[in-house]
Image 1: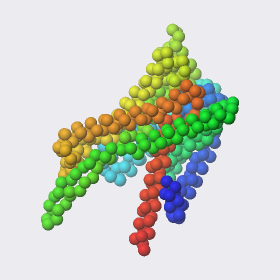
Image 2: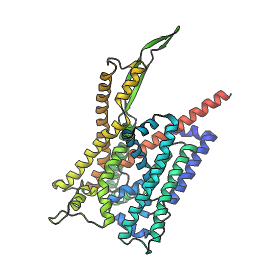
Image 3: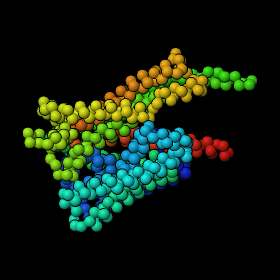
Image 4: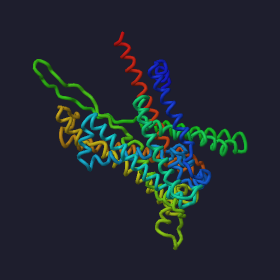
Amino acid sequence: MLTTIQNALKTKEIRMKLLYVLFALIIVRIGCNIPVPGVDAKVIQEMFDNNQALGFLDVMTGGSFSRMSIFALNITPYITASIILQLLTIAIPRLEEMQKDGEDGRKKINEYTRYLSIVLAVIEGVAIIIGFRNQNLFTAGGYVPLIVAVVALTAGAAFLMWLGEQITEKGVGNGISIILLINIVARIPSDLSNLYTTYIAGAGNLTNAIVAGVIILAIILAMFVFIVWLQDGERRIPVQYAKKIQGRKVAGGQSTHIPLKVNTAGVIPVIFASSMMSLPVVIASFAGIQPATGPNATVFQKLLTVCNQSDWCKIGSWGEFKYTLGLLVYIVLVIFFAYFYTSVTFNPLEISNNMKKQGGFIPGIRPGKPTTDYLTSVLNSIVFLGAVGMVIVCVLPIFFSGAFGADVSFSGTSLIIVVGVVIETLKQIESLVLVRHYKGFLGN
């Protein structure tokens, strides 16, 4: 990794790209601290401090949501729009044709994604502002401040979407992911400071402080190593192509492989599951509804007790079914979305047909339906391993938060995103270095 960065910094062209990315990220962090006009940011910050369920939204936006800055929506509308369009390619044949239509089709889909992102930003902005208005979090009355706030939130989301595309074109690629990365990383120093203050500085004596520090460091390093393995792990299925005689030449006959990643669906299942569990709590927070379990409690209030992540792993709460149920539902959702999203993005039948057309086959497996069944069987087992790995990564921070009160913003979702984006960005930089090297070699 260090060698890749050193080689990149030696090349002026790549160095300028990295400086462009750095300048863009500075703009992002400045915008995350500019408040929306007419909103009482201090009161909103107190609301977030008293409601841990809103922390997921705050982490994804780099703390700008709790500050209610102009970047409060951040790039979440764009990510949501991208996922929606990707899922719609199954239901709408026209979108599926565009996806297979090469560069022109992808440009058209990107254009639709931008339009849908703006629509989602307006809808989310209106919902948030109405919720805040109902709780008297605006410093000014009337409808003009509300309209200005919605416009500011929408403009902030649109600007970050444009900035992400600029980083992709003029920087080192993965613009949207890099913005998401810097938002998450921006919260980590304060979380580490909180851990130090609570468990090391407040340990009482030097021995307990050293033990606590070693345990915290070991857990963080172990999770990072496990996530790296989860992100890079893959099953390679060998493929052999039959030899063909074309004129006087013999073509084909080479061997290759189909790489099936262990974490095929990436972080999408975790985001879906976390969003679904957080949605009722977010709605209740804006509506001023409190969770309750008594005989007079409504169904929605009882649902809030199940969805409240901060109560899932508290010592002494396992005897109460509602807390255990919430954690079990979360685990089931992660596994379900892992299979669902993989089925959307990976089609064994299409791969089997393409292999058959090109004269390829898996050694020991007949072409056609047997190949499709074999790929499906292998994929199902790999997806399950990846889903279990994601569950472990996501449940561990929840367990330590509930059992020991170690409240940190870098949850399993955040760590998976950070590791995935860093690995992908380093690969992009490495490819830029290689391309630059070959260009220089050919130029000489």
